[in-house]
Figure (tube, one colour):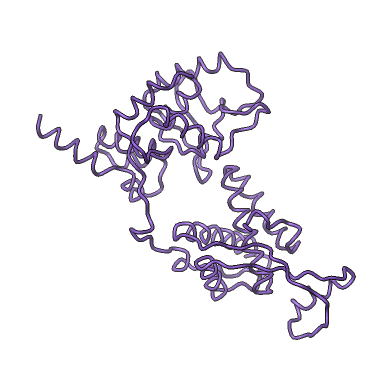
Length: 346
């Protein structure tokens, strides 16, 4: 079993109400649907653990509990839900949870709610970061009206798990020659536009999913859209003439049911999985070296832009990173070294 089997029906209504308020706030902050979906999945899993493993309410969550939850994510394990055989006695279970010292002879049995596989370091860090942001929201909205959630139980030292080299599989760099092979094997304007936005624009796949026609200024030839985290970014994109030429042709040849640039028959945006499979299919046609993925285009964009500009901060802003240290990880050292040797030789 997995987290997809944790539903709202399994959990406490007060907890769900807090989650819905938080997700509504994220929506107002223009967070992407993909981001909100991930937050919801993370919170449902955490609520299930708090309610059925700890038997606690959210207001009772403290640093020690978060530490135990981190171990649960690290080691994996089951979460059982206690099922009351007689519906008329169901209220007794929650009464027992609240007043744990009380002893009731209820006829109940355990049912497996989910089984958590051990999480990787990167996944644990992202998951705990979601919880930290959620509790920070609860802390801030209750500051002036209640003593609840006065402290964020997810401390920085707990959620900032260090990534070791063994935990990181570096994204493979796509060379100019490989991109040309892929481009030459791509004949549909729609697919070519996807590739150009990834390779020249450095867009993330999740950003490509929710890109809208109205994000493009055909006159000024700029792209204004929601980046990861919800910030609005105006991008003066590389190869703008090439990209906007393909865009205008694609718009003239396509019937749209909504504002999404890449949409299915119902006018809804493609899912992340559909987009990933489509890009991988395009890559496989070109028969380039194995290991190339959709994220390889973003790494190539960062590397080529740095070679061209020699300005790390410019590349940081272009990719919409908050920290130049992150940008550095996107610049392929082997390609950079090869380019420097070529420059010195000439």
